[in-house]
Image (tube, rainbow, N blue to C red):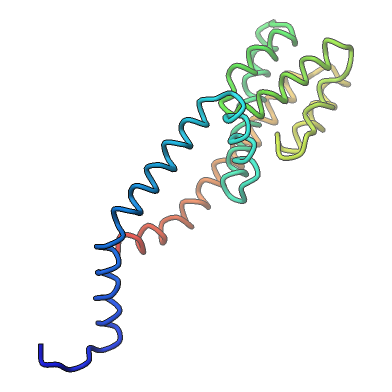
Length: 182
């Protein structure tokens, strides 16, 4: 009001406020459009498979999804085998339990390999799918005839790894949330 130049930090705040006031509706419409398109793609089978595969390749989130999928697969299949369910039925049920469609497709490939007389471990080695330790332990369990016990140990290990990874992620995310809120 006095005709003087504002300090740099104050001018930056005024400019930022003007920018947000002018362009916020455009950003909001763009973000809502991206969300709508993402949801539409996610509900298509091919789109869901691509998104789930992409999630596994993300640096931090991919590790969490991989650990959760590995633990879920090992726990479910181990329980089913211990209950007397055949391996093929156990794989079919476990495939339906997995939320990640790419991991479920790897279980489908494993079931097909078993039907054709192959091993369960080989199809589980796909990169960016299950944790590498799963296939090696399944191979040991298959050769020793103790697949259900091995899967139980794999599930326990990966569940503990998942808890540690979630704790690490919360340590990283907490300061970011404080900065955004501030």
